[in-house]
Amino acid sequence: EETINSLDKGTPYLFEVFAGTTGGNGKEKRLICFTREKAPAVAVDTSSIKTKWISSTVLDISWEPLTLHEARGFPVYYIHLYDSSGPVKREIEPTANTTESSVVIDGLDS
Image (cartoon, rainbow, N blue to C red; front, side, top):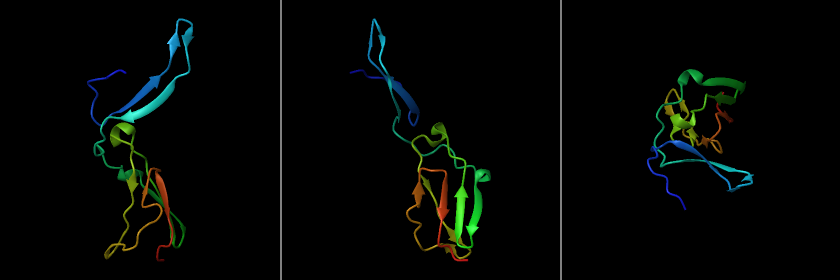
């Protein structure tokens, strides 16, 4: 067992673990992990948000994802819908939150 100190909070680290002998090293196993996650350092760049109507009731929304350093954890993106009167009352399922950088919303009023 080995203890690694002085890691930065909310930072992704890549660890490689492998066995080695004088004859060489075996195949490594890679793992990306974070120290305790923090709130993202930045917001999604609004200039990267793109929308495309697929039909009169289906909207495709996409955006440039945060980097792991910006996210300071493994990001989940949340989509909130608003109309001119305020928040849309219905839930967006199953894509109310996503680890992808796009979502298709179906069943919107035309």
